Length: 600
Image (tube, rainbow, N blue to C red):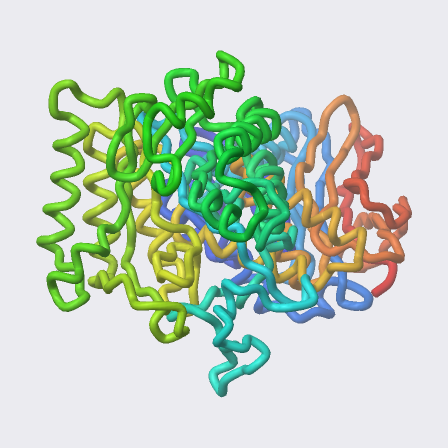
């Protein structure tokens, strides 16, 4: 089921090694696609469509055409249909017996006259490699910060963009807002509750080959910004489910001391309050099928411990949970008896012995020592291994406090080396540190500074170490950015928003070719025809891309040279997927179909 957008006619040959003869549409590139050499069909289509005048696509410059040539072949050779011009934008297909011998040729390639062959060919081309990889030996999740508040989604800029020092309303000559971070997100500073942002993030994660997120969580209390962060955590959780990603919490128990200091709770009730927090986590997250589990236990990280430092404290806290939801507990650096193991983190404290710069040797010493602790008899049941691109905080410049130190990016080698270690050691889980901590600079999310580089490295390592069949590459990541930009443009257009929902569904399910062609249609304000099928005497196809609020017209003609079109169906504007079906005769002249928007 090949998604169609404004392509000239594509003859198909019969016999062994059937392929396409495409002298007018990047023929060599298309043949390369069949051999698996051209992974991004969308680029080829855009390359062609970009050369077409808008008028070539019909009245008001908003038309996509599809030709299904209907002809019954008995013993005689079916006469050859005249070539369509580049303006005709047609797919050939013929119903009846295929001409397997003595067929007319073009450049020495026999031409098939069979709709069956054409449809099979289209279906073959439409099979994009799946995004969802086979279950990996160990899950790879990105540590995610849900704490950003930004205009215009919210009425003000949150602390994590300003740190009470920067004003994002100030825009520099380079177009960048003044934010608390050395690196600038590709989509600009954003709000973590914005649905368009969450969709963009989870789609990027899916296309990168990440298995999910580990969310930095401060509990659910309406104290400081903890409640706001929790709302954004819940919103992210819903989007990870839509994308088929796993979800996990990393609890900051430093919140307990903060709440005691602010008289929100008293020290005597700290353990009971933590029990309440864990009950909330259980009922809202642990019980969900998409929540990450290890050894059938919900995985629960702790950034610390910073308040509850004894294993007995956590045993008391976990005692209120259902027996099926006793966590696989992972604090930072050191295992507690109640836990399964621990996770590592960039050891920036070591940089103070080296003038504030964490050297590669120091990092190696720390990571080796962490693994030795985990594996020394008696070995921990499990441990979480971290991978990170760099560390470059802005705390000193923002007057928040002293810098924790600096870990150089080294042209991507820091990420490559830590990933290689995490993917090949005995860890049970890989944690990418981080998706989006701009304050500390440990960011793999696309930025204006590094582009998609870090996500491309993650894709390569997944393919090399975890899943050789993983099909996504760096160019595919642009789908998420294109979808995000169109969401912004179509915020109030329900019809286009519904089509973008279908784009997201196609992308996360692995049909990148179709998702890309739908986006191309939307960007070019033209409809897209795909899933063409002839079965049971019926021609049917789906319509996507740009869909006008004035509705669609399906038109037919028997002769492209005359260009006389008759409207056979008018489809009203709707948010549901437009489809068209019509009976087809088993004999008769060739028939051509096109779809055009009825209005702007």
